[in-house]
Length: 151
Image (cartoon, rainbow, N blue to C red):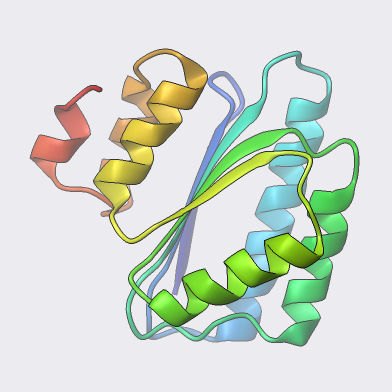
């Protein structure tokens, strides 16, 4: 199952993959959402803030979806600070290895803990991100206490 939320006003995009849906359809929706967010952010001077959460048990994207993501994020129009959250150490390792092969022109960090990822994003943006935290709460990414805490 795929859930996402984009704020054009605050330039954040939060998405969550949870087991139980059609993975190909979920990844298609993810790509569509990311493209819309990237397009909306392109005309703005500040960077898009992205949180991608993959819950335990959700399948990793296959080669087809990884290729689409690589093409999309290598485009010069892609300006983002991205936190990817997954408890799967193998997936974090694969993403890290891919980053060595294809250096990024944007900031991306991998996290096992969503609260730590949100704190990092706030540090990178140089301010508290209460709307981003509220969105993470609505999507069930973080609990009530983590939603309110600021770095």
